Amino acid sequence: MTQSATPANRDESEAFYSRLPVNDAFDTMSRIKSYTSLPTDWIVGVADVVGSTGEIEKGRYKVVNTVGAAVISALINAAGALRFPYVFGGDGAAFALPASYKDSAEKALSAVIRWAQEEFDLEMRGAVIPVSTIRDNGLDVAVARYRASKGVDYAMFTGGGMAWADRQMKEGSFRLEAAPAGVRPDLTGLSCRWTPIRAQKGNILSLLVLPEKDADAEELTRLYRAIVAIEESLERAGHPVPESGPGYRWPPEGLDLEVAATRGKTSFAIHKIKLLAATFIALVFFKTGWKAGAFDPKEYVEMTAANADFRKFDDGLKMTIDCDAETQARLIALLNKASEAGLIRYGLSEQPEAVMTCIVPSVTRNDHVHFVDGAGGGYTRAASLMKARAAVAF
Image (cartoon, rainbow, N blue to C red; front, side, top):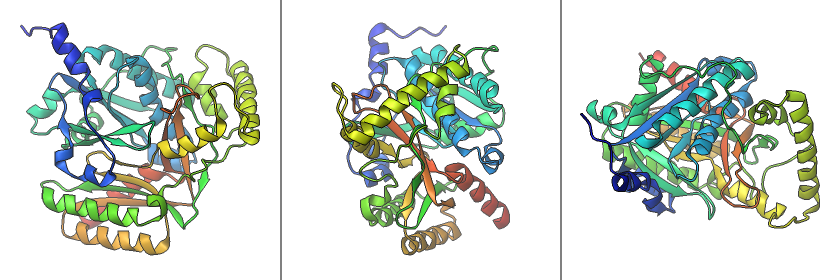
């Protein structure tokens, strides 16, 4: 019989992520030594929208993004004060938690699966897998923290374990059932109010770079650093969100999505009226610059830009950047060479705009997070194009 963890061991395990060092230079995330393996008694979770490419082709990219971000929102609310690692993937998300949160995580994820079906007629799948099971299959899940701004840091993953978990989920293993009809996740703080952000330099590129099986670790690190060096040669490293923040108009383009996310048992119409009033008040503050207590609209929009999650490592490299044609050509030449050498496979989606989906626990704090993706399909389309390239090569 397996003995349960003692309170002291459980406390130490739950504090694991919050005690990790925070890295300030993004290029250090390409190095294995920057990462620490998750405790063996942790779990990982993965989720995505089934048929997301088809939904995006119907113009539902913002719906897909909202559902992907909802996974993270639901987990944050279920975990309370616990700090834990997560990553946004466009049409889904991945996360890791201590095993003591397994039941809470499964309930939250199952509720999101049900909500996505009932609110948007989207099929979602999700899975929760012990880290020990991943290690039994010869892979690892290691994590690092990257500081995006003074208010926010994001998790980066390596080791192959998250990608393996995603494959297992798509093959039907460890799959969670949807919660009973009518069950809703707690998506407090999830919002989609900013207008799409137009490229200023050329195109918004959503880039996905994944290692081939048995790729040499040192060669891979050199490649990642070369990609990051090209990206960081761009103004503000290709950050797609202006320093002054994204645009805001009323009524917000994504208001119906926020209504669907946060209405709970309230009728859609009544909750929409409430949000119309709240967002109009927000518009007044953003336009006038008036402060209200601890809320400073100028600082808020500046922190929104600074906090945006536009680049990450998640068993590979993902970026959504504002890129000129010359730099794009340099990136593609480098990627083609690495692909032909059998080191990586990649997908690249081009679009004129980026979109953001946000989790805002409080407008008076600087820890609000903002997930960036391309408005024309972004990471999901890049993944589809990568599969197409692989099929042609085969």
